[in-house]
Amino acid sequence: MSSIIREPQFEGLFYPEDPDFLKAHIVRGFQQHRGYSSGEESLSPRALFVPHGSYEFCAQHIDAAFSRLSRLRSDHYARIIILGPCIHTQTPGLFLTESEAFNSPLGTSPIDEEFYRELQSVSMAFSYNEPAHLQEYSIEILLPYIHYLFPRTPLVPILMGSPSKGQQWKHASSGIQLVMEEAQGNSLFIGISNLSKPGTSATTTSVSMEIQRILTSHTWSDLASYSHPLIPFGIYSWLSILNLMPRNS
Image (cartoon, rainbow, N blue to C red; front, side, top):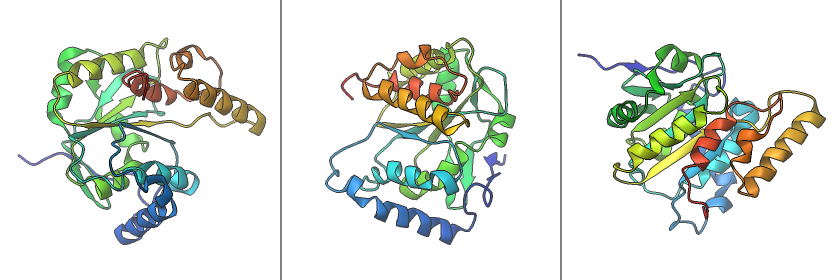
């Protein structure tokens, strides 16, 4: 039986499609942010928070985030759990992929199907939704970075549908936590979101500053109660991950 592989849907649109150009882009970005990772060989980041957008607008921020991992061994993490928004659906839910691997211009990354099975066994909030994964680019644009650094590490990609009364992030967090209690090895979490939806400069700045204030003050649960029309629902992916982190992280 042949494997089901999700092929790139947005290469050449939101990020380069040529493998050599793409690899050079990543290396150049890491070099520009080498101060972020210098002297950090002993550190093992547990989570990254990256923006939701094309390389044209977001590459420098993605470079900065992943450069912190550039000194780690390629087998440092047992799995990479990625939570991103699914902006093309109004349906609430936590969507898994039916694919057994995700392809990118730099290579193929396997899906951690065992982790998926465990998620479904502990929570009904997780369900398979392949169309959602095919239509959304939030995870796809990160795959070249992930494959460049961790080419054999299994992925746990989860898309978050339209949030329903603030409960979705709790279901994601609690389900992952239950599975993590039995999982072996280090896990890396990646949350994908912008700090604001599009709007006027003054309004987006105000929303972004308030979200940053909440994050730096470690009053993370305030994100769930912060209400504004320009809050991107991808922010709930960050909230799910932050809820899994020790308070002194």
